[in-house]
Length: 275
Image (tube, rainbow, N blue to C red; front, side):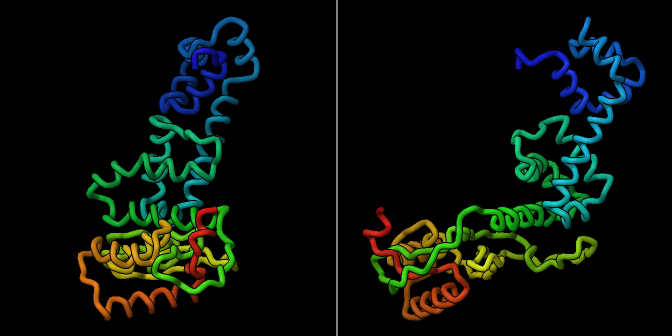
């Protein structure tokens, strides 16, 4: 920003500039001058010791790298320490965290690095999906919503269905949800596609349900507050299948199971849903 004091701009440059450590070691005064720090500001920084700038740079880099590793540990481990560190350093230099909240930085990193990973033939083809799945688990676990009670109403065709608001339905090209939780494990996931419902139940437990293509389309529409009739017929269109007695029986069985798991929470009378 134009009104940012020169010392703060210099500190930002030291944190993001990959050449900063070598340049400061070579001529710290010249580096500060190139960063716009002169006169009393330069004297004050020099009196405190430019090595402190590098120590702060290391602290920031370590904090960002560690929080990303905490959020996507299996992806980071499969990437390898050297490549992971290099990617995080490039992220800081070329993009940098936009959110003031550390918990949001891992998602920013994965979004930024996605094109690089997708185009790199040296990396496992499922690595990006594994990272997104690991982020999804944190997203659902930390979602402030959830905890809704069952409406106590039976399901009606022309009503929406009350659902656990932490619910998501994702489709993956690899069965990354089946991989062992051990970050040092190197098992390859089975190929997909895999349609997965994930949510946090009232007991704060993470819940998962593998769905077929039609079921995934149905649950997406139910989560979007469509009436059960709209969801049933709309999902047929989405999945390119025909409605039939067998299909309706499948719907009944699925909804009963999702009610047991805590995703479906009874019918939502229109008057209640419009409040």
